[in-house]
Image 1 (cartoon, rainbow, N blue to C red):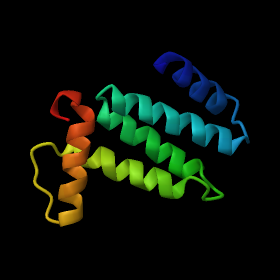
Image 2 (image 1 turned 45 degrees about the vertical axis):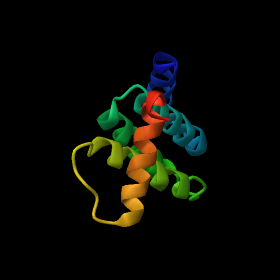
Image 3 (image 1 turned 180 degrees about the vertical axis):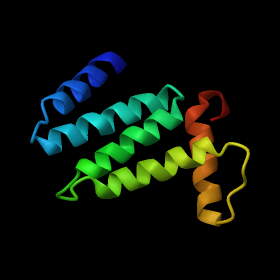
Amino acid sequence: LLNPFRAAAAALQNIDSLLHPLRCCVHFELAKVLADDGQLKAAQEHAEKALLLDYAGEYTEQLNHFQSRVALRAQLFDTPQNTLDKAAKIIEQVRSNPGLG
């Protein structure tokens, strides 16, 4: 799945496509695949690109939620201060390790 999404994102960028919603979705989906593959830094980068392309704000809430989840996974050994963040981190750990659930 990575190569087709990467190719689509690159092609749309190379032609300076004005189809911003499509470009946003491609980067968002690519970010999801990368996060599932454990490539959290690259996932964060593509989520940021998707946010920058989301001019209408259609995906802003989903992207912000996704970015916070990825950030929590990236901070594996840090303990969040906020109780809600602690719960979210536990949920993310269970989701990323099916053997725990």
